Amino acid sequence: MAGDDAAAAPALHTARHLVGDDLPAQQRVWRLQRFGWAAMALVVGASCAGLFGGGGPLAGRTAGGGAPGIDVAYEAVVRQSRATTWTVVLPDGADALVLADPMTDWFQPRLVLPRPIDERRVDDGLMMTFHATPGRPLRVELSLTPTAPGWHAVRLAAGGSSTVLRIATLP
Image (cartoon, rainbow, N blue to C red; front, top):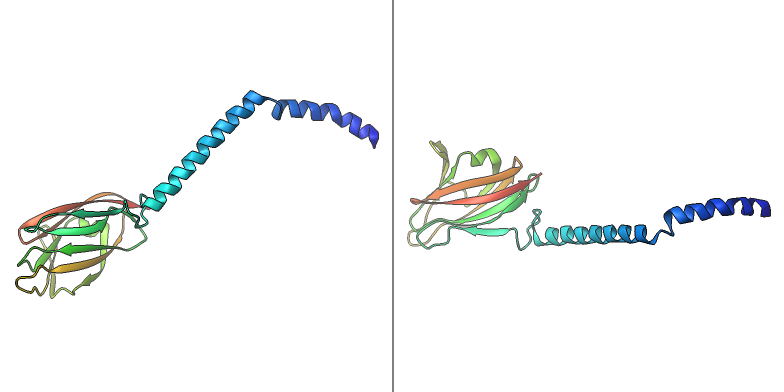
């Protein structure tokens, strides 16, 4: 038994020298590990902020931005398999919302509240007509499911005004 330990000692010394006793090599590995930990921390932070489609504070956006036009609150980063909700406020007096093509190729409408009284194809997209209350802007909630990954520019139009939503759909 003691002879086995004596024979293994030179091999262990050689392996330790090649792997564990090379301080400059260890320092390079430690720097690489620190870089890896920092990269993982950035990915976790970006995920929590909503950059990968989780509804975080950086994922929410608004478009439009004026009393005379259409206003939309939406998520700028969504996942292909997860439904998203857009809140659309139509201009005063408007009772129709047009989802311009090819928006309906990228997003499948699942639920529209309030329910449209009419829905039909027009030259530039899908038009939904609602009961509007005079003197009050109409608020429409669209629940949609993204169907294709990519960067999408979606145009919504109502009452003579339109706005473009820029959305990243992740797989």
